Length: 432
Image 1 (tube, helix red, strand yellow):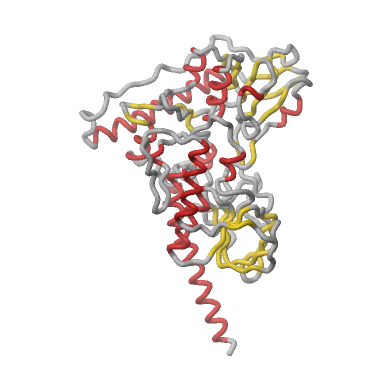
Image 2: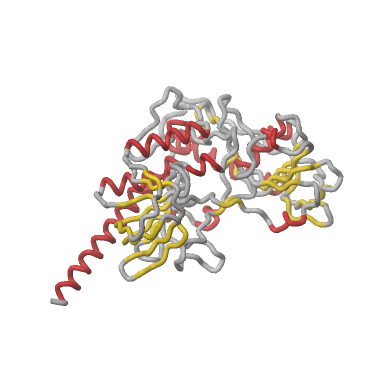
C-alpha cells in the first residue's frame, strides 16, 4: 500500500501517523488490528533516518533477536549478531510490506493544528483532516550542537554524527570527539583504527559490558525486566529520560568498547568540552568524577543482574559474576587543547539528539521546550507520541520496545475515539 505523495487535497482519515520508522510501523499494525483507518506520512522512504542520517559502519546496539515488532520476529540465521544499516532498512521495509502499511512517502508534514473536529494537517503534498494524530517521527532527528561550536577557529571542521559517514571523508589530521555515549565511543574507535589521533571529551555516560557472564548484556536487561521497567516506577523520570545510551558497540566480535579500551588503544581522554575560547577547547575538570559515577552505576546494574540470576537459579547455567576494571584516568588530564596548532582538524559533536517537531503547532511543550506527555498521551486530546526516550518503558526507543507501547497507546486511542463517537451521537440526538 506504499505510494508517493501525489498532491491531492482535502483528504480525511481517522488517524494520521507521522513517520514510517519502526515506531510508526508498529503503531500502524496495532491500528489495523483494531480496524482503525489510518495513513502514515513519511518525508522520505520507509526507515528514512536509517537510510540517510547514519554513518556507514553503524550496526544496531541490540542483537538481531531483539528486533521484534508486533506480529513479526527476526527470521535470519544470526540471531545473536547485530544488523548493519542495510539490514535494518531491509528489516523495516519487509515489515511494512508484510503488514501492508498505508505509507505515503515523500510527504513532509509542515503543520499540525487543532480544529473543532480533530486536527488539520498541512503537508508538502496537500492538506489532511483527522480525528487523531500519532507523532512517530523519532527522537533523534536533530543533532544537539553546543553554542561553543561557533567559536571553532578557521581550518577546523565541525561535524555532527548525522553528517559523518566514514574516516576517509574527514580532513587530514586529528579528531576531537565530544561526547562518550554510544555514538561517541563508536566514532572514536573507528576513527582511531583509521590511523588518526583521537581525543575523546568525556561527559556523563552509562558504562556496560557487551557480554556479561557469557550472555549479551541486552539479554540480561531483557529477561531481568530492566528494559521493561515502566515510567511510573522510577523516582526521577526526567533524569531517566535524559540519560545517554549505553556505551555499546554492535560488532561481529562482540567486543566491549569503553573509555578503558579506547585509552589502551591510544585515544586521549579529557573532561567534557565546556567551551571554545580564543581558539582553545576548554575541558571540565570532572573527568575522574564522571568516570567514577559511571563505574558505580555499572556496579549497581551488574549487582541487580546477579541478584536476579541467583533468584532464578541460573548461577549454575551461566559464567560466574565478574566486574570490569575501574575506569582509568590520568592524574592530571589537560583542561585545554589548542585548536589553532593544526593537531586537530575536525570536531565531531556526539553530544546527543533531539526530536525536530517545529511543525507541531500545539501546546505540548513546557517552558524548557520539552514535550509534555504521560506515557505517550499528550495534554492535547487525540494527540499521541511514539518512540520517545523512556516514554512508557526503558525500552521505548528500541525497535523491541515499540510493540508494547503501540499496543497500549492504540488501545487508549481507540477508547478516545469511542468516547468521541458516543458524544457525537448524543449531540446529534439532542439536536433533533
